[in-house]
Image 1: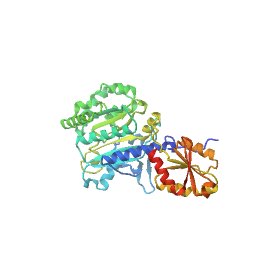
Image 2: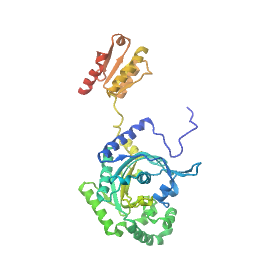
Image 3: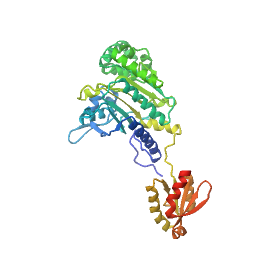
Image 4: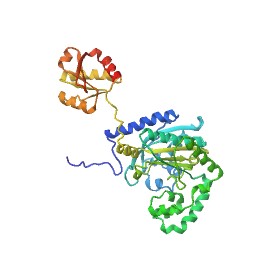
Length: 424
């Protein structure tokens, strides 16, 4: 077949049926786990006022400077495809007066986001994320709880021996003092930095700590550490978070050079990597963002959250063969002849009402082909309906392991199937 003229845009990808099972499984685990911890689902628009991100995320961040998709409407509105989930949820929190509710307000989201960056393993220009936000609580216990939920979430998806890195970048005052020390260290080394980091010296030197350039990484390894510039309050906050993690027996590495790529972060920041897939980088990350709500026009409001990149999770799960995702069918329905094909619709619908999953191949006429399909799906039983069975108001139940067949009245089918499935 000739190649189709039309392809997905660069950095975009189709999520085919065989991969939908992964997304569905991730969603189901998220829904159950987050609900247990009191988080409620929220959905924000894919398009937001661009200022939500330029103000909230930061003008000097790579996300705003290089990676956002902008558009201007006919009415003159300047909008952006959302590149991340926290700023829109902060906007929704303020817009809908969620600050009047008992605090913290615990929210979670699952959906597509957009960044114009170089496509690579596990990274796309349209990508999916799942994330948690707890808004309105300053206690270090919330930081620890969110990390606990993140670890449990990834464990339930089949991940083991993950690497958790934790740091504190302090509050605005700590960051201001640290920024001066960092600049004093970096300025004499300006010409050894990459082009982007030379520019960051003027706009946002903390972003240099996040650079992946090898020369820059070597320079950063000797830079002043954020931990040495924390005020007493920020130091105690981090100490409490780490004590909670110790109590929970969650292993971590304290990384004094860890920062996040968005300007709204304060105090605790953390990332998780899969040591078996280092090329994916951080598969999850987050932290505290106590200044974001005020930046967007609200009051001083403490908050903490994290996000997980779904594509990176799916890719790792596929390599780990974690295909425990596809729901098993209880039965396969095989029909012989047009009359049986017509009758099959009602029987299948009756089984569906009893939550008995039935696979079929109504477009096929050959019993051999249908039984081969049933075997491939690894169902325990196949129902067979032909002209004789229609005449006698019966149906055949075939045990796919033994090949034994039993004929029952159609009125007794559901009762018989339930009995067999219960004893299986």
